[in-house]
Length: 246
Image (cartoon, rainbow, N blue to C red; front, side, top):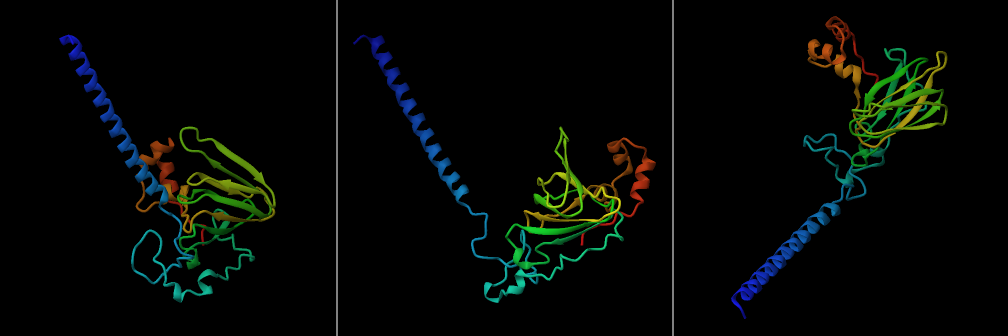
């Protein structure tokens, strides 16, 4: 065999071995990735037992609540005489609404179940002002009266989705988005029930957080953010920003 042909054959064999080695490494990498992906998918975010009733007396800090010994759990851990059939007082609220939240702090049996609910009472022309739930999607149904509701999408669109709701109507507010409800009737109150996809959904009322923070956000920052004079910000910060949640 000529020398040139022998060299060519050697080069081809070397490249073939490199290709096989690369293929083997790729297959090994794929297998390892699949193994770890399977482990990630196989992890169970849901309770691994029938219930995990919150032990409110425990001083251990975890993401949620430490569970009681199931042997000492009773039916009372899943019960609350909430009287949600009774109207709430809206006269003391500056925004004309009263939110009665039933979460894991009220019913220990909700721990790890990812759900809570609220009754919302609205005075005539009352509102549940723009707010967010950082940990929950909300689904709301009107029990009495009519409500104008809506939510705003994130930047940069900031699109408003709004709807007039009548008795029996249902509306969904996606998790984390700013939303509101307003009773547009000047003569009659309204009532709604909301379910939320967290045992502790949290609530951030926008006006309270921005103008009622402790300590206050600099009026220079807010004046530039809202494109208003500092005296307007100072006036807003001087208001009493009350919470309508109970």
